[in-house]
Length: 241
Image 1 (tube, rainbow, N blue to C red):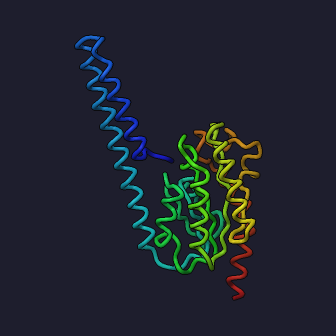
Image 2: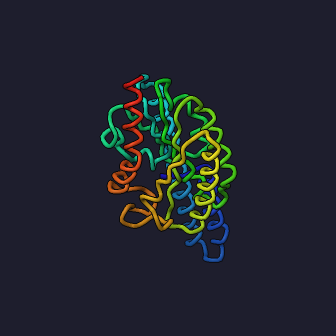
Image 3: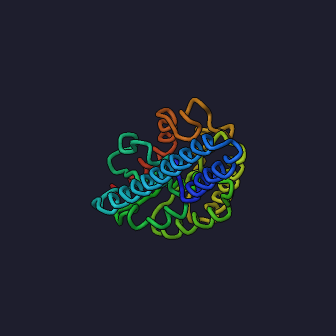
């Protein structure tokens, strides 16, 4: 879901150059092999980096071209993007998840992702920020608060960021979730602890993920069961208005 970010691309390239630099001790044949490995690794990183960027831009332009109409928006990264939300929750629900997205990325694309018809937004974002060793829960929480503020006039359900199987990343996610809970306690949003239904032990259970990160069908079924009553109630209010 995370793809290869610009930072990851630079890290891959730097690592490959280090391999080249230390190759001299192994003789000419080893240097040739390492040189080939450097070029191949750099090429793979560049292709994946560009593919990720192209896919992101393609999906964003698709959102911008879609007609107005959905009243419920599922907003986030590939954890959100991986579900067939209309089939799980109803035709008025639109999926606005993009793989690899970050809190800053979602903030920047609100105009394309949240049409005027939107009455409620289910937001889950921050996973890709927190799995980076340099990820700052405080920065992610600040940008999340800016997203919520930009959605004034709509009902915002701020969902907990899901855990991984990495203890260090989970510590950052736990801190971000606490800050997001505090934000909603001040009134601008409703906090939903999705992890309580999917990950009560505070770690991604293997039976709900095929790689420790992405969710499987059972995980999405449980997630939908948590938010379905809120969607149904909101649709009833829409119909009565």
